[in-house]
Amino acid sequence: MAKVLITGGAGFVGLNVTEALLARGDSVVIYGREPLPVPAAAAFAALPGQLTVILGDVLDDTALRAAFAAQPIDTVLPFAAITAGPAREAENPELVLDVNLKGLVATLKAARDAGGVRRVVLPSSSAVYGESAYAYPVLTEAETPCVPISLYGVTKYAVERMGMRLSGLWGLDAIAARIGATFGPWERDTGLRDTLSPHLAIAQAALAGRAIVIPAAPLPAYDWIYVRDLAAGLLALVDTDTPGPRVFNLASGLDWAPLAGACCDVMAARFPGFSWRHAAAGEAATVSFNETRPRGVMANTRAAGLGWAPRFIGPAAYEDYAAWITTRADAV
Image 1 (cartoon, one colour):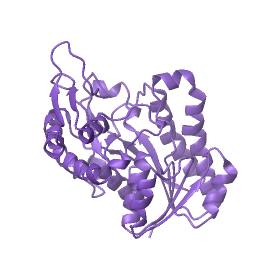
Image 2: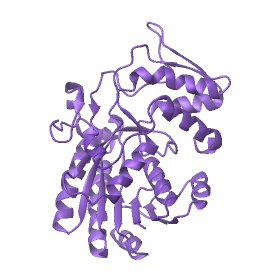
Image 3: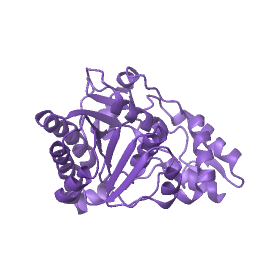
C-alpha cells in the first residue's frame, strides 16, 4: 500500500489521482489551501483507501513539515501550482514563481527531512515544449527541444530540472511527468487555472440543455488526454521500479480535432436540448478551443514501456464523462 502526500490535491488533477489511489486501497494525504469539494468528499468516503486532508500553504515550511510528520509518507506528488494565463503573468509573476518553484523546493525539503520517501513524481506539462509544439509533428522527451513560451511553461521546465537536481542531492528518486492537455471528471474553476478546457464548457452546456457553436471546421490539430487515463499514467510512475528515463510524456498521442463532432454527438444523445454545430464563415463560436494553430502530438512510447496506455479516446472518453456528469452534476 502506497502512502502518498499530494500538495494541491484538491485541484483538478489532484482529485483524480487521489480517487485512483483510494480506489486501490492506498493512503493519501491531501495538503493545500483548498478544502476538499463536498461532492468529492462524499465520493471518496466510499472508497477503500484512507484519506487525510490538511489545510496549509505550500510556502509554509512549518506546516509542510507537520503534514509529513502526521503519518509515514513514501511517495510525494508536489502538484500545487498556478496555471497562469497572460493577464496573471503580467499582473503577478512573483506569485506564479513563488507557488510553482518555491513551493516545490519547500515540499522537497520537507520530504527530505521526514525520511522514508521513496518516490517523487514531478508534475511537468506539455507547455515545456512551447514553440516546438508548432514546429514538430511529434513531440518526444529526448529529441524535441523545450522552448517554453508562457511563464507557466518556464516554471514547469524548471520544476523538471530543479526537481531532479535537488532530489538527486537529497536522496529522493524523482520522475517527471509531462502532462498533456487534460479534461474530464472533477474539472472546475478553482481560480488557479486561468484556461479551462472547452470540454468543461461543452459539459456545462449539455447539462443545461443549451445549443453551442464550436469553431469552424477544420479544427487545428490538438492532443487531449482524458483525466482518468492521466491518473492511471501517474500511478504507473508512482509504482515503477524500472531503471532508465526519468521524464515521461503522459498524453494520448493522438490528434483529437477530427473527433470533436463525434464527441459532441455523444452529449447530444445523452442530454435533451443540447445541440452543436460548427461556426459559419465570420461567425463567432460560443465555445472556444485552446488553440488556433495546429500542434504536434506528444509521443507516449516511453510511458507505454511501463505498461500504460490510454483507454478513453474521443467518443469513449465522452461516454464516460457524460455518465459521470449525470451523477455528479453538482461538481461541474
